[in-house]
Image 1: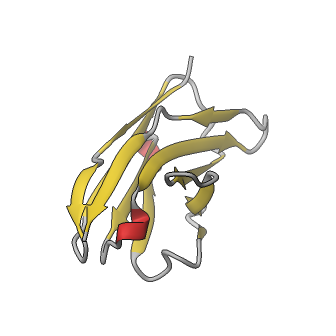
Image 2: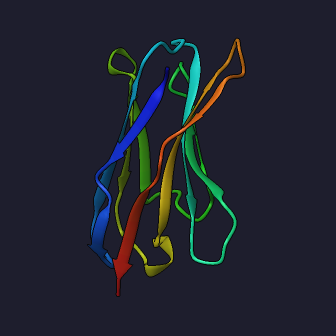
Length: 117
């Protein structure tokens, strides 16, 4: 059984930084896409950033240049380094992994990020 466990959320200040981590445990194919989504108050869940097994990266326009996604495939872990935080970054952040060959889709439980202005 695959589990994704996020950590690193909490309270940050506007202009500051936070780093999120997500570790996948269980049997998971290495050919996968790892991503971070977020859902702000009263908003729909949106893609923040994703990284494939070749480290190709995509970012939402709202975070490009401020957030950096990275992965350690040996540890089945994905990171999100968030800098220049803004109040509008306040959301629950979810880790997501999709296996490319099987299309199996896994979600973490979410971690709250609150940015104070």
